[in-house]
Amino acid sequence: MKTHYLLAPLFLFYVGDAAALPDCPAESYKYFDNCYGEWTDDGGDHYVGEWKNNLKHGQGTYTFANGNKYVGEQKDNKMHGQGTYTYATGQKYVGEHKDGKRHGQGTYTFADGNKYVGEWKDNKKHGQGTYTFADGSSHVGEYKDDQSHGQGTYTYANGQKYVGEHKDGNWHGQGTYTYANGNKYVGEYKDNKFHGQGTYTYANGEKYVGEHKDGYWHGQGTYTFANGEKYVGEWKKNDRDGAATLYNPNSSIIKQGLWANDKYLGTEKEVEDAKKKQEKIYNTCLIDKSNGVDMMIDSIKLAVEDSCDAISIDPSWYENLKYN
Image (cartoon, rainbow, N blue to C red):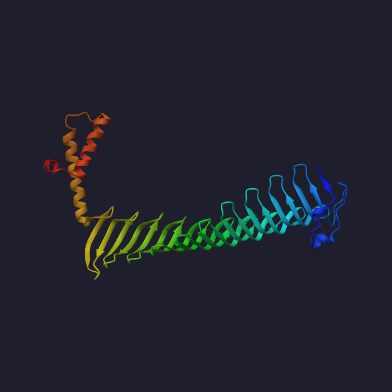
């Protein structure tokens, strides 16, 4: 049930339009229109302010039973216009509202010390804004549906910085990341990771130019060393892996062939010959060690295969002499 109260003298200090409005009637059954009064519902919510057509409309203070409080403009029983909403938890929003929601320019201060200053739409960060973290880090840029989206700059407290595109709260698209030690990446991102074409430059002048995947150098790329040597070829998860050529500073070839796990294996012919030799050792070993044992028993078969596999990869002088 709605209960009306005659405005107490405590509220007579209010100036402006409210001061010009008459007090609302004391009788609860009467209509509140173009007057200033207070109201308490059965749940304990309390409003003091202006009324129009029996609706909260104009300047007022709404105190919720849970300790939250709104001080500002209302329209047709909803927050609308400039106002301050303070939560019992210590969070606070100061700014514009529309139809009961944060909408327009406003500042939201979180209980942990984080703060957002910028545009809002339907209770969500939307448009241009600045989000400052309690540790001093900040993001300045565009937001959409409560997430960083579009162009923006994220600056860490230690001085590292990302400048570029965002999507759904992640670095996504073209961007530049500058490290505190002077290293820099310029290129494509996907879901906060290097992904696509990019250039990673070290402070000492060394540089990687090429493809990235899930945060790694992965695919075709060129690494230039500080001494001028250059590796041109394939990469896998930051390691040289695949076909490539290592050049001197004068562009003459040092090595050309295959790499794996960041190590040079040899020319393609050398690797192919080594592979054939390994297969020969394995097969010969398998014939030898399976003689006289029951290979139908899974445990024995697996033990023999594992033993021959190890021998073929790294044969001892005896095994090599025996099976080669």
